[in-house]
Image (cartoon, rainbow, N blue to C red; front, top):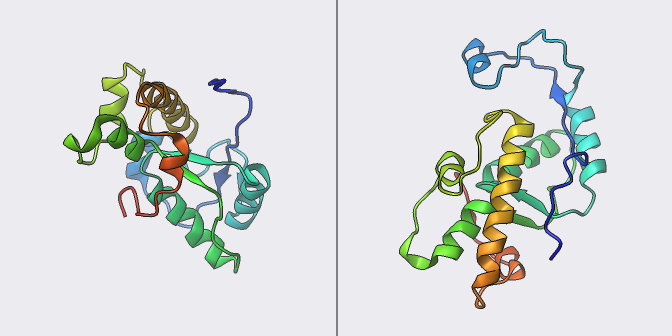
Length: 162
């Protein structure tokens, strides 16, 4: 496998917010009237689908992310995502076997795998941390002859926080 992160190949957008919670500013730093160009939910979802096409989605505890995207698609009268999904939380469980079957946060795994938490709680920062974690987990998988990425994609059970 040619395992590299192409940082220039990314999608990031900001939504026009109808409701705004000032408490979240200290987590992600986004202001309601910030300087970022903002899109409607419809514009953002259509741009995201155009970017995503048929790519495999890699996320940490992906059920939450996929559920949020599907809820937005439903509001627009569009079908749910059909993309394959790889969940780093699930992959982590598989690399350690059944002796570990508890929820492990992205923070915990980034510490375990010595991944810097720069820009944590921003979309691009969390995506980059998840990408680095994914590469490290895939390397662990390659040492285990009993598990392949295709085994992890075919998993039907819900993974994540939902």
